[in-house]
Length: 223
Image (cartoon, rainbow, N blue to C red; front, side):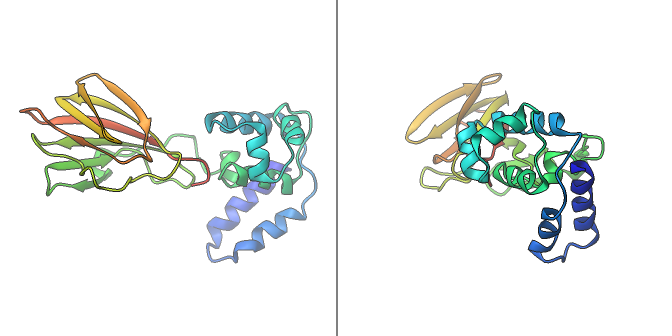
């Protein structure tokens, strides 16, 4: 029942994107309690919650569903009503169909090299976004190239990422200097660094040759 209703939600949104915001949700709230998928739904909720580093109490505060109820759902001991399932999904910053993976065909999205989103260029810094712009996507992977002496920004630039975001960079070749919150870190090929992306930071290439690095940014929950 839960999967069918979420599928209906997803299909309806695809057929009519102009539907009033509360219409679909209001219709789903009238549906009966879900049955038969409690275990799978609960395991998915637990996985998403833990990946977001949320405690049961924190998710309870975000969703309006009590921590004991969340615990029962995660253990597969109870099947949530559609209203409760939607609240849990909203607390995770997702739609119900996204929690149930109904927005994914076979779980694989290919981004051909020729279709990567690209930017930069005028200041010796270019980048390509390797991940697709999917709804609810919380991770962005990008490939950056820096000419000798080039930088991604300056010390007075504001943070590009929202509160709670985290970033990991891996230097592919050359040398990269990470300047963050007044600190300087020198990275060589193969080195990696992880930090709070909501702090002011930028990258520089202090070497005589071009540098490349991968950046993986994880958005905070609810963004």
